[in-house]
Image (spheres, rainbow, N blue to C red):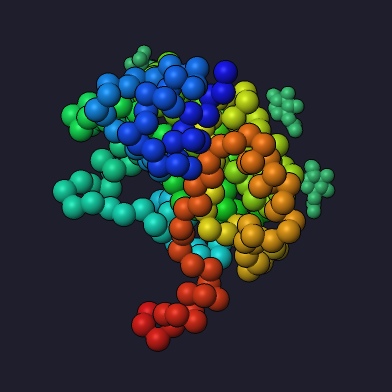
Length: 230
Ligand SMILES: *[C@@H]1O[C@H](CO)[C@@H](O)[C@H](O)[C@H]1NC(C)=O
Ligand SMILES: *[C@@H]1O[C@H](CO)[C@@H](O)[C@H](O)[C@H]1NC(C)=O
Ligand SMILES: *[C@@H]1O[C@H](CO)[C@@H](O)[C@H](O)[C@H]1NC(C)=O
């Protein structure tokens, strides 16, 4: 049975068609009939938050930095971090309070796209995916996952996507605008180039959605647009 029930859902946006989508897929999940499915819900591991606590190193940094996290009024940094790390407590409670049937978790921006070293980016994505799979394993009726992927090498990204979908039952991937690359972290890889064909071929073969998430612009673009207004 195909686990990727979100794929037809996302591509057609047929939110009223839950019944037929479920019937088509074998994956059991909680469907109250009136609840919501939410996407791009960030989940962090403690090591990701340690990186986030480091002083900002600039957008072309080889470190994982979390410039995009939008801190809400009324919650402290510590509470927000605790919320990011949690799955089964406040998060589930808030889902119940807000009629959310199912949540798809993913890595916060820029995740592996912030790491210029390909091995480090691969390791981060692989380890994040395994930890997330383990963390939701006891409640897949309420939680699913989008894979984190290093986008340095399209073939390796394709294989990791395949692994997460086929072996970890992930529903697709979330990748961020561009992959930082190069020894000085000053190269920016965009995924519409021909060398990414093997990745997009795998996406098509697996028939899963890829969520292309925005992130802070690459430094040259940022300077061009905003240097006059630091
Ligand atoms: C899943 O495991 C977590 C961590 O041990 C626990 O807090 C949670 O209650 C468990 N959920 C279910 C549905 O068993
Ligand atoms: C991408 O990864 C594959 C598989 O590991 C490898 O064979 C290939 O040489 C890599 N491509 C580049 C451009 O490094
Ligand atoms: C995708 O993963 C499955 C399950 O591990 C494996 O059998 C299959 O060979 C993989 N496909 C590719 C193209 O590597």
